[in-house]
Length: 254
Image (cartoon, rainbow, N blue to C red):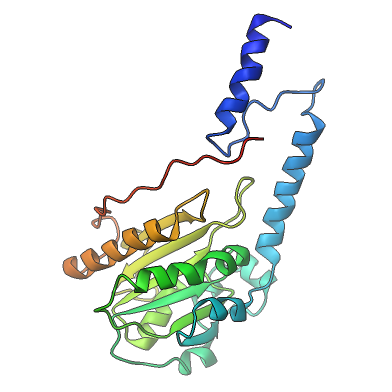
């Protein structure tokens, strides 16, 4: 073994401790070593499972510890339709829309399955609790549990309920390194069919311990909510000035 090879063998394990990226995997002939190939196949299977696993609203409700909830569906009647017709995932089912409560609320939190129910089941309730604890002076609407939902479904929900601000907590598209990543999308005064992604603020990769922790995400989100209400807008003109930073990621050594 050459001196360079020895140095690489020592370097790659050290670098892998600080990233989930698949680096320095080596090779066996013209292919990956068997254990790395099996790891890729397992990650792909986990991603597929995250996309297709059904939403379990009761799991989220239990984690909310008594906070009132309302369940709704998008206009996408099933998972296949949801995946093939993103536009339907952005619109409420007409029957569910008619039954949404209206009130004098400042914000509504929408917990949406998105592309990873696993992320929602594991992280959404804890993030709602951590964020609302930082907003004692805000009038919080019942938490909406939305099935077959895209981010823009929150615009329709906020419009129907008469809330000024909507926060959509949604399972992000799973990748080969993470199948449980939660995203939080903040929109002030959304208008269905008019509001665009440029009008939203997003916090992504909420999934302790390898992503944002609940407390860090809640501090950032609450800060953005307060500042957005002061400015009267969210999106590209609203910057995160919370000063909170995610801790350095250090996954287990392989």
